[in-house]
Image 1 (cartoon, rainbow, N blue to C red):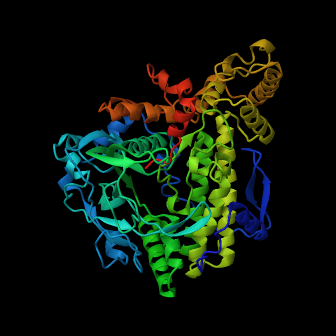
Image 2: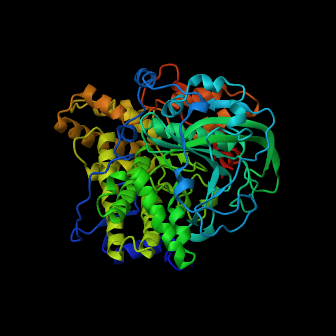
Amino acid sequence: MPPHLPFSSPLPTALAYARSRGVLLLPSASSSRRLLLPRPHLRRLPIPPTRGIMASAAAEAPAPSPASATGEANTRPRRALEELSWDNSFVRELPGDPRSDAIPREVLHACYTKVSPSAPVDNPKMVAWSQSVADILDLDHKEFERPDFPQLFSGASHLVGSLPYAQCYGGHQFGVWAGQLGDGRAITLGEVINSRGERWELQLKGCGKTPYSRFADGLAVLRSSIREFLCSEAMHGLGIPTTRALCLVETGKSVVRDMFYDGNSKEEPGAIVCRVAPSFLRFGSYQIHATRDKEDLEIIRNLADYTIRHHYPHLENIKKSEAWAVEVAERTAYLIARWQGVGFTHGVMNTDNMSVLGLTIDYGPFGFLDAFDPSFTPNTTDLPGKRYCFANQPDVGLWNIAQFTSPLTAAELISKDEANYVMERYGTKFMDEYQSIMTRKLGLPKYNKQLIGKLLNNLAVDKVDYTNFFRLLSNVKADRDIPEKELLVPLKAALLDIGKERKEAWISWVQTYIEELVSSGIPDEERKAAMNSVNPKYILRNYLCQTAIDAADQGDYDEVRRLLKVMEHPYDEQPGMEKYARLPPAWAYRPGVLYKLTYKGT
């Protein structure tokens, strides 16, 4: 066990640790599992209002309508690739590896290694690109028509102004310290400063080996790259903080993969996705330096200063280390509450997959709930213990925050008491956000724990589709005089194959719900509009991804592009696109196909 990281044990140990530090376990409305909440007698320090990504309208609200987005984009400058304003602050301000080769090795006393993309390419092709991400970068849309664009974004040609590097970090994987991990197949090109002064890192994923590749080839296949590209943009459309995706390029070369881990490897199309985020710093970026020599603790201090200076500048003039750690915890809690609200399961919440900015990062075996199942995990590797299942995500988030505070404590940036307070703030923020989300999903003016708890229990018992149910719920009228036999009519499309006993349970719940609606006094149409703004009609179901992947494997990228357009506006009705809101077809539940839909994509 590394010297400064006391938690390398399974999740329950972290919960016991939290209890011993003044954190109380109370029942959660989201499942039968327990959720961490603070004891009220613990101190309350004044914390400045949270700004930045978590509190911005872009993070809080769904993506703007096409008209408004277009209007805003038209006011921005349009730049060619050669005109982008590059900065390389990460390389300039932090210690780097003196070597620049890609030979797998342990990289000491460094935050990064300068390394260039090296993926084999043969007539690369553009699969899809995001107009809204191009607008963030002030990139002229005509640039995507350039013949050399796929060459540039496959890494085969150098982008003028970029200074590529791979980041060094470690992490806990499934609760066990895994040592050095790092960017094994992702290379950051640099930071682009847009016309608003915003800093955006551009990163190519699947572009070749780095010193952190270990025994892997540093490449990515088309199927996993399509999933990451689409889900990055789908999550943004849902209003959930996330890394973004500018474009997806097929390399024209094959990559050998064993998709089912059964010894039957085969060639698949290679691909590279260009990811975009203010920063790709992770919890593990700080953890790795606490496991090494004492002088590496200074790297943690420098990295914390760098992060605050560039990504939390509003904290520079106060006791910044504690306030920063608190804000990281609160952003993480906010993020996971938003996941729970839309039924998103990340699948691999290792500490190297946790963004220090509170962004959803690293889309591997993710999945959205179809039938409501708190124990759902899309990661076949996680099936035995289900550590990262849907219901566990809030508690795993706290466990990960404990790992994040450990190197900060070791570097004397925060005290142990302050670390405990950081974890307390996570619990408080999560419950505040989760209760707010569930209240809005039901169109109620205040939180009703009993009503919501009973609803989630009913959804689980009858395996009701999570997304479609909440979308249909807005059709229930605040009318006590509706005949009993008609109460479930608005929900008929979601309540499939329920027997008499279960039907009575649902009627009882709807009657109680209607009483709450009547008491609220909110007009039906007003409530319906508000509910539909938080309950999406469209989510990126795994079978939709697979349909697009199957077409792309045959050289047809149209379905990827159509799916992107639908997922950019998931709360809109989008007439003519109703098929994308349908339940998974029967073929998606066949054993071989089901495994394919929940693989650990690479």
